[in-house]
Length: 481
Image (cartoon, rainbow, N blue to C red; front, side, top):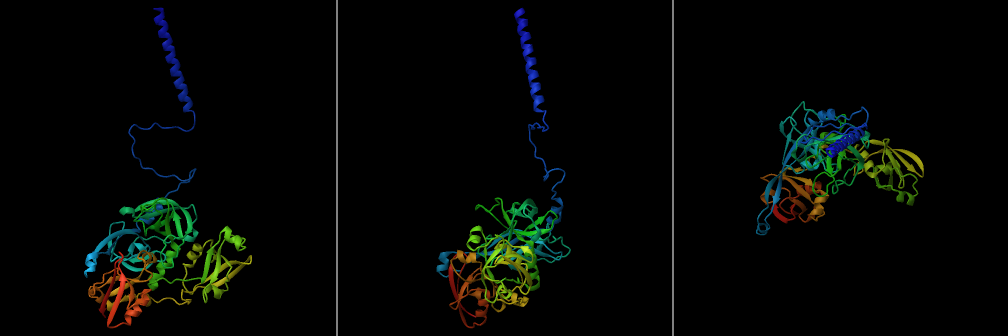
């Protein structure tokens, strides 16, 4: 009996000791300021909000989202594409067409229906439909496009529309919060947040004729369908048009996206409305970026600015007194630290505009006033009637330029594309289809639309047209005008 009682007493004391140790351990674990909540047996999804920074200051994106989401539209396009039967082509068959549908985004920038998007969103489209955030639908017309900046302007017939106010892309700072608003993967009215990662990025839209690249880089999630959408600051002001992403071949976002700065967009939109084409200004010099090696080789003490390697004869720079070897540091007091920075600043002006240039020459600061000129070294502006003359009405066709990337893909060096073709056109009667790239007319190479217009306008009787279709099929057609 004594042994049994003794064993029970020892067991009781052992239990007390274990409970005491467990209590002490729990007290120690909970003694810190950070408390850990028990995970529920069945986890649930909860809505969360992000609190930025520390203390009591919060980053709140709701106002910016509310101001911008109603002014961002969903764009769908229909484009004629050509399909070929090579055997039918050999025996005199003609290419067949099918309709390809695509989608993107756009930004309403005025209450009377002007909408900004990307050139590649509407390029070649025969039909464009715009859907507002409130589900209203409209047929849109193209006012004009600018492949060099990837900006296009549409117009719908409506008034009192919600629109986004322009911000100032020169004032943005790296690390600043931004929102990307668009329609990725057909998910309408999607808002994502990120920061500005870099400014003045170039070599993004390679293959374009005389590209103007000074992109805003962000880490806000942008995916296919976001093209043409809005990049806004936390006030809801438009600071850029989302255009491109970095992708590992899958076409989806992997961390970086690029937007056209709104200061460039504003100028392009103004030109398209007033003239129907972009009034492009040039500084008339060849430029090079400066790095440590280049600075050492050329005895440059400061790495800031861009190096003038050559002057264009009769250009703006020569007339203003710029010299080879100068280092341009600012345009209108806006610092330029790369060639893309300078191109972005000049893209805001028209031929005939005067700008102040800050530069360094022989270690001394020099200030010059420069009158910008066009590529033809004139200060004249292109008239709207000249800009819309790409339609050759009597032939029932409209021609457009061909991007360098498409020329390279097809392994050709020149040509113009038949953008639209009337069913009654003699081109159509000869079997030519829309999308055909004319490389020569009557054995004369065609470099641009103006050249094609001049030759066709002066030709009567028989004409021989040679070219290639987008799938690589070469063809030639002979018919009378």
